[in-house]
Image (cartoon, rainbow, N blue to C red; front, side, top):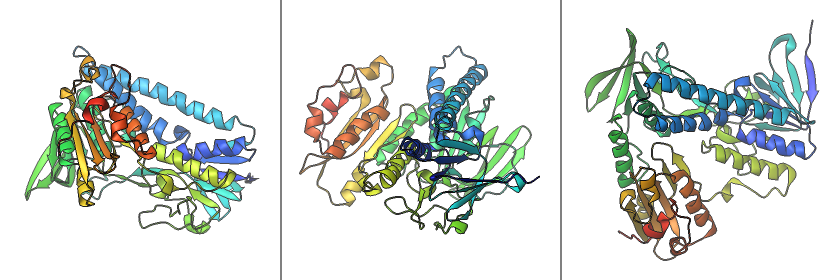
Length: 461
């Protein structure tokens, strides 16, 4: 029997990520009828609470809590169980919060466009056809699997998702790629007790950062026992008894390394495959990212793209800001845009974390800026006893200052609590607060923020 269903709504949201769900809540609160489509019941709430920010940062916490007397495998399995419980709770909460609203409906299934106003969920006689005057695309991104011989058939490749859910701790984890994702998992699994090797194609880790910052971060990773091979091009993957053998070239020499599992941390791409965007007249880049203007409108003005799918910075908080822009377009003045974004911070959650914002020293000098540099090692910051109270004195703080205006142009904070302190610095940059004002401010004690009292006076160049 044909059970095809046709529905109408004021707005369709394809994807349950941060941007999509935030916009969906705002639209329903405004009295709009919203249908949100998510292809997997395991992804209610999006990447962040399920397989991204929340589980990985929880694993950072657990891994740094392991004591010498804790048996590695048992401790790891218990940690994964804790992650599963939290993510399940968040997932259920996200679903209930939206689907429980009178004018909102969550439909689970794969969606694709059939025209510019119509989306179909599912296939066959049970498919659902939904039509709306406004559509939001929020399908996120997915891992890029590099073109390496043997990788597609290997039984030992693990995804970042599996590394937040699998209860077996690998004895030796090999990570291909030394970007944010690769280094975070390297730090996590090393602290849990795995042997970890990172193979990075670039000549050094963190090539976008200044040399001094990258050197200190690399030293911390090496000091934790992580093996780092830079300038390495992986050429082949072979499964062997009980594990995998990875071949790579460096300086013209081929070397092999054996591991229990390997992670291809070589980036992510917008998840647009299968959406049939061409049927809606929505244009994409050669990488599959949905092309948008500064108001996040696609080539079809009534269709918006939010979050990773539009090819912008792959951060949950940027997806949230995308939602603010779309909400402003649909419900308010319509003036907010991506061009309003200034001093957007980012954090690499190794231990201790590295948080950065704005220009590096190299970028500032290349731009011909008249700058001053304030820099100090965490272990030498007298006004920051918190580092000693939590027994984590590794790292450094660095600030790039405009010598003419005393404004902060950029910062790199490699320190305990860096992910928090960088928000204060970024806010100061957005609001035009001078370095002198930050240096002379009153902060709580003992805290990491009070390091600003001292470091901003340490002009070294």
